[in-house]
Image (cartoon, rainbow, N blue to C red; front, side, top):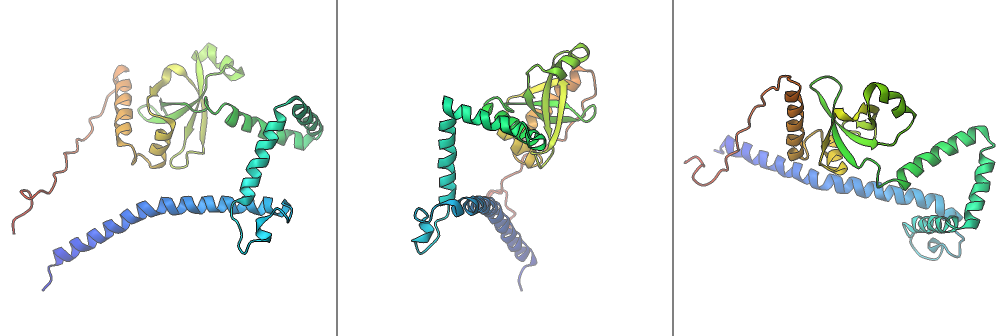
Length: 252
């Protein structure tokens, strides 16, 4: 007669193997699907405008995926090269003046241009620091990305009341592309040494990835509470898990 405990242990191992396979295969499959979808989307837009004599799909027995994407990258790079000289800048300025005369198009174009210039031109300074901020209530700490130290009208209006302020972005877990833009006093921020990528992983995984950084953020939050004389609640200690060696296995 089979031992039920052995059967249950075997099912547990099979379940763990399956979950491990999902962890390994799911990111690869999703990444491959997104990349393939992007290539197909760009090809569907670019290939119809490629002359038939230069399109390999017309004289090969199979379609060449990514050829439209390659052509798009070459054209964008060439446009950037031409725009860098005086003649190219003059043409772009003339086109922008025409767009500025169209009410709806002017607003849409100027907004999109400002977004792309901010993200691409200043990518080295965009969200390059991570900090802790006490939000949404006392004793609750959120991870925020420091967005800007530049002085503007908002900083000037807040300086008489709050002192030096900074713009921070508080992302929402697990979708870190959405969140809240906050202007907060710089003195209320606790800088962290972790990178933006590590902070994003911590937020997307809801604290499951990067436990060493989670311990660091907890320690900094407790230190801030102690400095203000507020109560620091004790945290339960998790005993180390014993390894099942030959001496620790139950004897039959």
